[in-house]
Image (cartoon, rainbow, N blue to C red; front, side):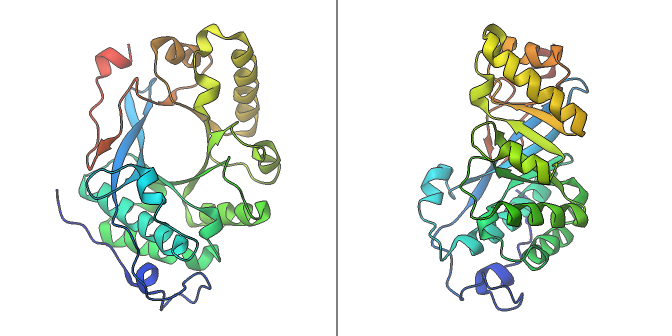
Length: 263
């Protein structure tokens, strides 16, 4: 793999950005790397984006990594993940969007906490307009108003925004009243077997219609079968993600078989 640049000053030492989340100079208790899973555009037959999924240095699961993070290290971990994800994507030559998960409860002041992300993008030559910040709707949020402020700040900087696992939690619709992200990723529990489940079809068609009216793009996440894929094609959703197209690839960008999967 090509070499990449990771700025460690803000997130590793917490000495320069003036954010109350920068606790001390302690090192993170865990090493990380990333796997990448594509979000495909089945209409354009291209990779729209790749989601960066945190892993251990030898490909250990995200759960094994996250279990080593406590409240004291959450801010530094969140910041460092962003930097490594950007640096890794740039080193791999990703020419699509890069989707990065972030912890809204770890962001104290958006305009300050974003600095190391901007520095990482600049240092690695990765355009900020090709970065998507996504958060998990089902995550417990200490303050929804704070999340809205984060999203608005990120949008002003030129990043795209996304809500992940939409439909898995309880704050999604209320959140949409205050802020409309660029992208909503439907929770995979809503998708499973949707081609033969009329209840799921009614619910998802309603969400798709609402998002269309609000100018929000929909990603069907967790596609595993041709039937699930074809349902969303028939209902105007072209962005999809799931094992049907490609599993996450550790430290690499998966290759998509266009003939088999986009037919």
